[in-house]
Length: 162
Image 1 (tube, rainbow, N blue to C red):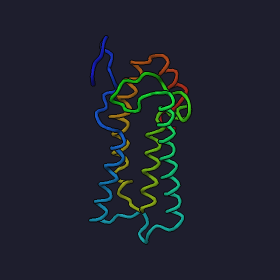
Image 2 (image 1 turned 180 degrees about the horizontal axis):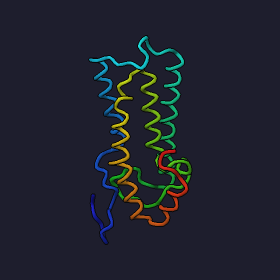
Image 3 (image 1 turned 30 degrees about the vertical axis):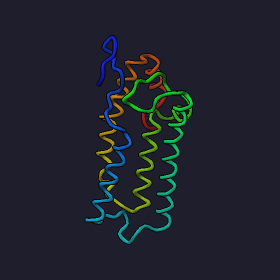
Image 4 (image 1 turned 180 degrees about the vertical axis):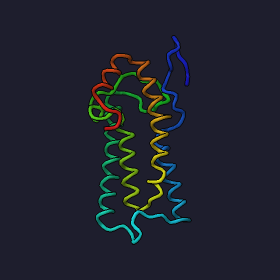
C-alpha cells in the first residue's frame, strides 16, 4: 500500500483489478471442465436453467454497469489502486456498498447455471474469501481512514453485500 502525507494510505492497496478474482476461476473452470467434466445437471441444462442463468448473467452485468456509471457521473475513480476523492452514496450504493462486486458475483453464478458447469461453484468459496479478505477489507480500511465518520455512518446504513 502506498503511503501519502500524514501516514494515511494513498489508496486501498489492491494491486490487481478485482474482476480478475471472478474471471480467472471461471476460466480455470472452463479449462478444467474440458478435461474433467463436472456438470450441475448430468443430463444437460434444461431451458429453465439456461434462462435463469442468462437472466442472472445480464442482471449481474447490469448491476456492475450501474455502479460504474454512478462512479462516472460522480467523477469517482473505480480503480482501487488510485485515490478516492468522494464516497458514492446514490444509485446502487444506496442498497449495497459493493454493487460492482455483487454484480460480478451474480453474473458468475448466472454463468455457472447457463453453462451447466459445477466447477465455478466449487471455486466460489475461494472467490468470496479473496474478495472479502484481499479486496473489500483493504478498501474499507482505506475508506475509513480517508472519510472517517462519514464512511462509518454509511456502513451503518448500507450493508456490504445486500
